[in-house]
Image 1 (tube, helix red, strand yellow):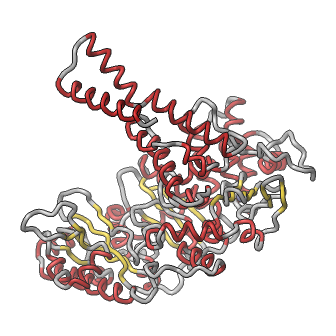
Image 2 (tube, helix red, strand yellow):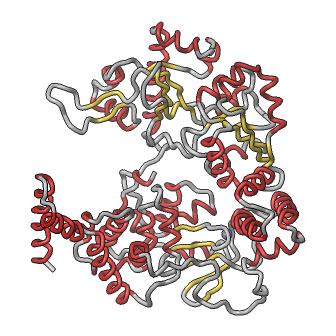
Image 3 (cartoon, protein in one colour):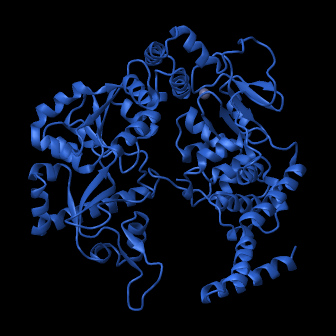
Length: 596
Ligand SMILES: [Zn+2]
């Protein structure tokens, strides 16, 4: 997503916006030392655990875990998309959006939609011409009406079928490349074209947006091959975390439906629709996100998650539960349904028919029921410890839920399990610390309640935290590249952060975090960004950081490997490869000594 706006412009927008001003205009903020606090706008609470740091240009809620930059706040609070949030802030700061920035729906994307429609027709035509592909479709039990309704197609078993059709003109080739339908070769082979088709020998499922326009594809391999399913990459038109396969078709089938059922695969959706269960949709190879659920709750108030009963299915279900807690409001129903192990909706509905399948909906567990059931698996209630553990496990989940029936139900059920009056349990969840009375007196500045502290023992975590808290201190580390030789998981993150901080002008915590927005490390980095301060100021941070990096190099770096090899050379002798490695290490050591 972020890729379509230059990083330097995002930096500028973050630098020119004041997070306190933007949040303060929407949420009443109170000054508390160097930071600001408020009752969290994202969960219900009586005493403030929502903190805004003007220094870091970052907010964090210690109750529900909500956090982000000024851009993130607009996305979360105003439900804006990334692009709109940046554009909004740019306008306030009187910055002009760069010309290369664009998004779906903008002029220019009309062309892309047009190309995508033609690509879809190309695949449909291929299916009609290919007996082998047709045979596969009918073997899977899909009839002609359903094939047409879902506009199923076939990507030929060729490296350049699509390329030949769409890639002969420069402009069109650029478009199909942008749409992820062809891939540019990284190594040009003599005599070979610079591009090749992404989808080959696959049954193609076009993914449509709410207006029915094709925005991407899922492709299932015909017969054998890996990967079994392949999706379009993120493109200007297609964002995996937002789209639901089958939603357009579901809405076409019925203007209003009682519920939507989320299943795991394209084939499941197609087969269920064919069986008359036209309220089935699927996420696209990702866990169900809040964006998905927001989309769903705009059209219906009941959602049933349908999972395979095996371990992977149960894991996916728990992730879905975690993502949906904050959306569990009154008037909405969230349910979890598990199929017998080894079955997916596709095979099951074929086996037992639609009526029996729909009867299974009666076995679906409401969210709070499923939550308790899962927690109980992890604790031993015959033990006092078990009850305390249950409470501890439930507290953060409870905090994420908005006030209402769901939360009440959960509290009641939990209270019964831990043998405590429901009111007492709720109170202990809300205050976070049962020992402290919730009186109105000045809060201590640090440490914040619930704020994590970084153990002195973990050098790497400390170093990462220091860069996040004091990005300017990164300049003190002269040669972050030298960390390349450090053999320890997570060091790459530190190296990257150091280089990012050094390259940005006037870097802030928020600027750094924006670079990780779409990466898996983002959550952990955000947490560290709000951890207790390790040092008092930037000068101290620079010193500590330098020392930490030196120590990492000493303990895990090439020096250690060098000693190991030298020792081995003495005792046992080295083989050819080891000798070469040692020579290299000795050389690089000479270099780093020369430039201290
Ligand atoms: Zn919160």
